[in-house]
Image (cartoon, rainbow, N blue to C red; front, side, top):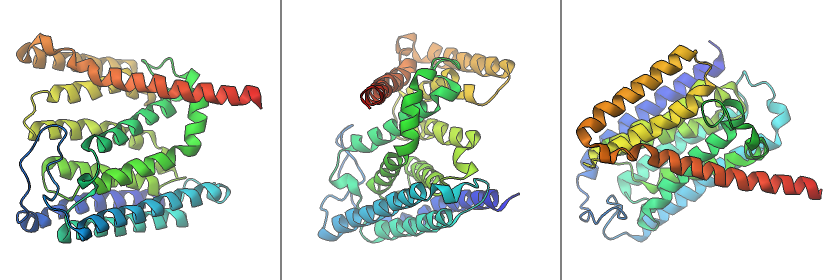
Length: 323
């Protein structure tokens, strides 16, 4: 095993340990009294009476982390020629890994001492939307390779892919860092899985310009991890529409994501049949009137792909014709 892949597996192991270490904050967290839940637009885990320091540390550490992440990407992009060997670790990768570890420790400290996150001053939907657009951008970038619908229909997005390949890192770095500092390090299953997911996304950025960063199995794992997180959050919250998240995101896998893995036809059919069986099993009990839940997430995601991808393609073509 090369140094690159040893470093990758070591980093993933550290991400898991960092997630588990959040449980050690439970005695401190149990001392914090929060306001009653006030509905879907309310973020429960924030101080009833924020202080100057709770705000200053949350926003200050977020900005510091954001500048670090953007600076890392900027350095990598401007030194692209020096990073041609994708099979080894470069200085920028080591800086990314140790910098990520430092900001994990800083967030741990910030939660333990001041608790509050960016949720105190921003909408709960802003964090969710930032990640949704991240996943949509991945669909656009991967579309020319694996298609949008059963391996077909993605070639028209090639101009959008070329532009996003160059600039997507800056948006991804914002979405991940913003979401990371939006939440305090709470110990609910949803928070723990969310932080693990965020840690892994930060590692993806740290391994920029390496074979890890473009490994299709690793990038797919990052894409489909949202299934586990979405379902867990819904179940813990006692929401009955958890199948919307499970079958909605799994439908994306069936229609689009699995077609970039080189799976045999029989394997694809087996996965599809298992999916159909799960739908029948769940909705025969839940009620067929809720069957439309399955298409809600795909309709939103594919709609955003068509809208965002279409706009970028039109802009790129217009630039070429006027150049």
